Length: 436
Image: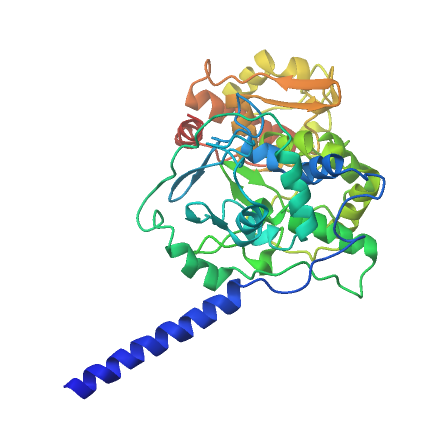
């Protein structure tokens, strides 16, 4: 019996050691730091603060770490996941509740390795992508964050169900899904493409929202950028697919969408994507936007959770004018609501009045049978600020019933996309609850 116990004990020790070696091999930093012109910032930004702010915006820190109402970068914003709610941390230099007392080494560990003051971070903080960043880029970001106004604001504790509330379990998740490596340039690609890849995959972490996730909540590499649902919104397919992605978008449309949130004849950004444009992309240099476009153009076509084919000329719009629909519809409730509250700005032909952001013709949102974005905007409104211009649409959630919202959303999809909307009052109630 003693011999058997020793054999079992030795077996356990060997298993632990081997398991530790596997985990270390997976999560230990791999590769050299990427260097200019791939990493870093454009050459005309010599001082640290300018570089740091540019990189902080490129990494989209402002959108996630700023509350809807309150001081920028002060944290507290909730992210509702299938297994609970996580709150963004305070990134201001407050010594008690922010990063004021973090050393460079601790900041790098949090950003690239997912190791914070409380242990393992949850991958809602995209360290799985930030691991590709150069050390200098991370330190420039920290230098800028240390220069902003300190805000004393504790971050609420995450509210997660068991076993997700056990941070130590993230070590196992990391061993399976996380490869801690620096960005490696593809020598067969141009510097512009590599710069775009670094911007999209490392800094802006576009795939975190636009890529479907597996049962372990890690992104599916085979469906990279193929679209999915995020926080009650549809993150559309941004691969080069000509039917479901951006393959048929002109360079003018794509550049305009990335820098202003509106693509003529296509879509206007709303919700999380509007925040990305407002707080991040509009500040990118022309050369970085060109690099980002070059990279997106080369992403392999793929289908995921967002197979929305856009019909830019549905039959329902062929005879429509700005003031008359000139088409029949069995959806009288939705049509009546659109006529009363929407047609004045959006117009029956979908061209929009007063602002280009009101156009609905060719919109991905108006071609989505689930009408996720349409439902969100009807309930909560939408806004975006580009330069000195502020675009705004009010929400109607306080005056519309759930069945009203469903009827209007389905009519919008039918009239402007030629699709059969499938929104129910129950769907609207669920979306409404997510925003509370």
